[in-house]
Each structure stands twice: as C-alpha cells, then as structure tokens.
Length: 316
Image (cartoon, rainbow, N blue to C red; front, side, top):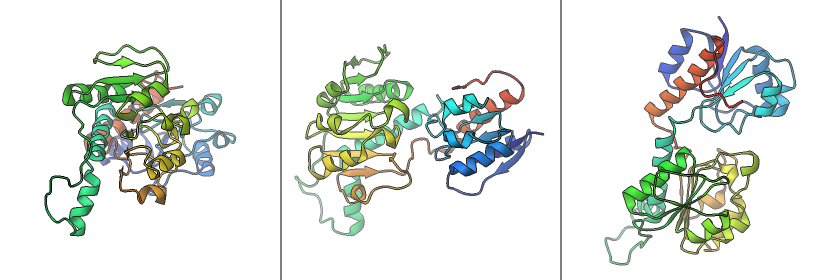
C-alpha cells in the first residue's frame, strides 16, 4: 500500500476514501509546509495531497525524491514550482471546475458588501452607535447597472460576468492576455489600463504567480476612477498590496473587497484599519460540498496516477 501524505485537514469523507486505498498520514497542523518540510515529505511519501501555503519551492525538489504525484487541493498551484516538479519526474494536478461557482459567489458577496458598505454598517450596529435611519446615512454605491471590469476571463471570470450581467444588469468589459470569446454579453478591451480606467467595479480572477505577480501594480491602480471599487478573489500576489493600501488611504479609489492577501494569513494592519475595505479570510470555496468535491477530485487524480492512468486534471 502506497504512502500518502495529506498536508492539511480536509473533509472527513475524503480522508476515509483515501484510507481505503492508501497508507494515509494526515498532518494535524493548520500551517503549510515550509520548504525543508516539503523536501522531507518528497523523500518519505509516494504521493502527496498538498494545498495553498505548502511551499514546494525549487529547493524542496533538490534532494532525494520518492513522490510521484502532487494532487493539489485547489485550482491555484503557484505554491508549487511545477517546472522543478516536472524535472523531478513528479506529475501535478489541481481541482478546477468545482471551485468556479463558489468563488464567483464570493466575488459577488464582496462587490455587494463593499459597494453598499455592509461591513461598516454591521460594525456600527454591533458597536451600539447606530442612532436610527436617516436619508443620508452611509450612502454607498448602487450596484445595478454599474460597469464591471473583469481581469482574467477564465471559468471564474465568466461565472462572475454571468452573475453581474444577468443578475444586476451590469455592462461587462474584460481584459485577457489572449483573445477570448465568451457566451455572456461582454466586450474585451485591449489593455489592462483601459479596463482599469473604464470600470466602476474591477474584479480580479487570474491565476497567481509567474507573470501575474504584481499584475495590478501602482500604475494600474492609478488608472482607476475615484469612485471605483476593487475586488480580488484571485491570489494576493497578483496585487501590489502597498500600492493598493496607499490608494485607499489617500481616497484615490472608493473601496476594496479582498478575500486573498500577499502574505496569508498576514493581513497588513493598514488594511485592517481602513473602513472602506471588506476583508474575508479566504472564503472563496469555503462550503462543505465544494471542499468535499475538491478533495475527491484531488484524490481521484492520485488514484489515476496509482493505476498508471493519465491524470484527469494534470497541469504538468
């Protein structure tokens, strides 16, 4: 029976299914593997089911390798140096599709909460400082009919576009590095700057890492309108967090809704101090049904490897 490491707690049904097939070690820590721990895991286990925060850097693959597959729990895999994994003879998979709707739902949650100042309002009520309804209290941004700009028109981007267009009558524009035809009424713009300057609400859905690191930089943020709202459900490293904080502090943009951060779980105090920011603890796929499907998909890829079959969701 091959040895399988599951690096973090995942839904019990998936762990039980894994134990029917593999000799399973389930880490109890909620923190990701450091590079030296990842290296040791690669030397000790036949298969690994990792997730966000496990640092499978190039250095982790430098030593002896026993592992043949990394069945990643999550669609994003920028925590894995896939080139180094490939050189080491390790196949890597992820869990697309099952995360699409849940992540798009969180994007809409952040759009509504940020535009309508829901976080501020809840804090006001909880503080006991709310003095009752008045016509000019906590005036926010009306969402219906606003132009939404989506950065990255993959599965999640298109799911966000459909919700915005069909649910809130929002004109949709999008920036994608390649030409992309979609089945929702939307207009592709040629440059990121064009999107940033034209959209009332910007939603980032691109993968993290690589050339997307700091894609939303100081110059891109400078293109935004003062009334614009920025939402990130992609990865924290896609955004220059320092530049975003400065724009929010100086009132150069109206607000932000964030589910991801550059150095999770560290959230800068400057962000936490801002009233015009909605902060979520990476809830994108945080529904039991979704996380169970993700875990089963990751496990199915590992089983396919064990059976000598192609991985259904192989990324390298």
